Image (cartoon, rainbow over all chains, first blue to last red; front, side, top):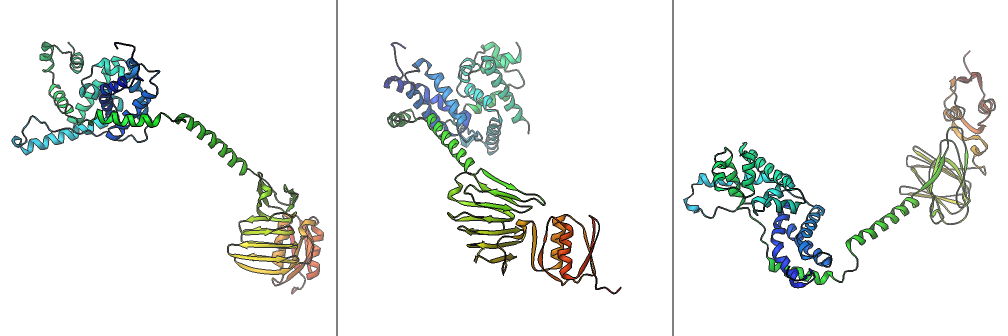
Length: 169
Length: 301
């Protein structure tokens, strides 16, 4: 921060939103699997940041937002099964694929989605933060409030769980 | 390098090209790669930052003048809940008494009304604010002397009795409700039946049937520890005798159609037996408490 910036400043607050909200949205989505609910939680978390802007300097905003979002998620009434969907591989021309291949791909996607739904919430969140967002262990550990080693173990375990579950018929 | 370390480095994006060559030889490599391939194409929620900011600014404007936070609302709700719960607890708090075999008890109500309970009876009433709603729950037999005032209700499983201020006896047992009115007027309500009976009359409701009769006393007989009968079958009289004294009574050569009018004391067995047998021309023997025989003289031998 170049100057003594305050989260209560409208511009600072808006830039925090631009910078942090997309990843925060993904983070809650990984946990809850619910698009609408996760957007609500993001907005609610930023409202809380605004209401506490005097106490939370911009440098602390990120960890504040993740903590608040996590609490809001835990308080939310419905935790549903997290069912992820995968886009078609866009670099492949659909016309060139055999129906057999397409079917296999679809089945694989469903199996993977089911396996991800079966992970624990902690494993899933850590794993998706790492694999989807490409975050390093250190950052994941910070977001989840755990040690780097614990974060790595969760990601490991999640990957192994997915692999064995998909490969077993 | 260990497989686990390689995997860690791969997951953390730290593999050098040389290490990657080693990593791709491990058996699970293709599985990992395929999972990664799919995971990268997971459909994420579309987050519209500009729309989100607009929404946020609306909510900021709305939220700012708020006075009561959720936390204090919960506190207020908790206090109200506690008050309500204690009110309900106090208002439903019941007092009462019950009697056992051969036990009478006088129970004074908060308004000085007097209830004399016969044996095997139970009365309950709400303690709080009872004066505004004089209702008692009752089972068994009791003599009520009610002070004047608001409506007084005796609720029994067999029906309810409503009065203003009067003296009456209630006997509410399994399938019968007997009410004797000694003073004033009482109203008996059972399901959709409603009857008013004046002083000097009694009503007996048995299985939906109604029997009205006159009474000649000013107080129920059991108050004086006496059992009274009005043209009752002898078998009923003997069963009351048995239960009052806790006896085993055997009968011999007795005409079952005999009917008895009168009373017997509940505290003097000899006198009670005489009171029953003499008017009907019967005899009795007492060998011990469990072997009492009442027999007719009018036998063939």
